[in-house]
Image (cartoon, rainbow, N blue to C red):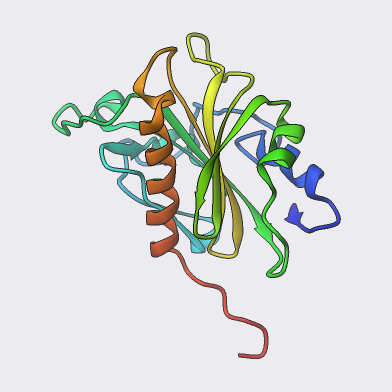
Length: 199
């Protein structure tokens, strides 16, 4: 198990950039046996400590789920044509590592260094989270190297969120930042808050 500590930030960040977070498998579009086939509107990761709640119009691909990883896309792209959405088309991922209570969040600069990103532009922050846009490797052909990233503390874990879209798509515009922020805020509000030692 990888735990985020202030003594080993780049090791932990490097693992976050592997997306699947466990086993170094990178992006995984294959599933485990006996996973649900229907796209999900919410799921639990990390033994139930983190509830993943996608932004409006997005669903979770059940075939992507790992203990600390989920991949999301627009619901219609995942086979729910009845779910009409004006959300930008893109691929959202959320990966987790356990975090010590007093460990600081990684900075955008640390994430960029660990993930080999360039042209970093910070885009402000929401409470307890940072969101930025950068250039970097893409998980699939036809996606823009420009993409959004966010880090936040959720349910006793550090979450790394990434949003990819096609070149010139709305997902890599300011609308993409809103999707990342919505995923972080909704997931955090539904996730367990760890109890402090001795309480």
